[in-house]
Image (cartoon, rainbow, N blue to C red; front, side, top):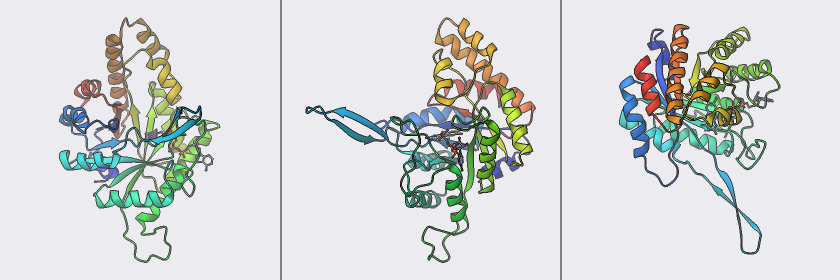
Length: 318
Ligand SMILES: Cc1cc2nc3c(=O)[nH]c(=O)nc-3n(C[C@H](O)[C@H](O)[C@H](O)COP(=O)(O)OP(=O)(O)OC[C@H]3O[C@@H](n4cnc5c(N)ncnc54)[C@H](O)[C@@H]3O)c2cc1C
């Protein structure tokens, strides 16, 4: 089923969903199943699987020159999605990027997903390659997520890159896109970022999943601004329970999000990460309860490979 159909069928009851990362290359899929198994009790109608593009690794040679190697540390997004749909009979939602793909690669990737019976995708631009400061698109690739949404929407109408092709199979993807309650780091301001978000919806996106946030007011204000700007699709809040003290600096650096004062002081009082873990769970439970009270369609949790804290939150909420 499509995410939008799951939301419609829920009759206003908030749904539980989460995101997982493919394992590092060389590990087997059991680690993924071990993370998912304890969460199945809470009946997630869909599970997101992130996509990880290539990284450049430079190694010094005997002659002093640097050799550039291209490595993908977490391949397997499509395989994991197929395995999830097969094993758990829930919808798997692969993330798909502009970065690292030309439009032909994207088309072929989507054909694979369609043949596998995958009905939902989250369309993203992706970040810059780790060793580079700014994102640069692949030659012949999509530049912004909006362009990728346009390509997927075109395939949904049976239009492929080969314009001479007639009666192309009409795919039927439900397209999700990313939204940033605290603004995307490169956007000049939040209003402009929301204008760009609206363009993604106008291009065919049917729902939005937000970046993590730790202060619900940021989400409520964001939703209000989106509605005022004419965005009417579901806006799914993304939540992450904080688990270690160093995330106080790592998460703002990596995701450009703020922590509220109360959460900072609770975490600073903790003597070790076991205590931080507990504070993170309690904070996330309170966030979840308030979001549900305000009628959110789905609560989407970022597991980042660990499910014990998500399980505790789900057992308190769902
Ligand atoms: C829910 C979620 C899931 C994610 N999953 C993944 C994942 O699986 N793998 C991964 O690598 N990354 C993932 N990311 C990170 C994401 O790829 C980065 O945040 C990336 O920097 C932006 O992607 P986007 O799709 O939001 O980009 P876009 O919507 O293209 O926006 C990127 C920037 O460009 C601006 N912009 C948009 N259109 C235009 C235009 N026409 N002209 C000028 N500026 C414009 C926007 O305001 C924004 O600042 C995820 C993020 C979220 C919130």
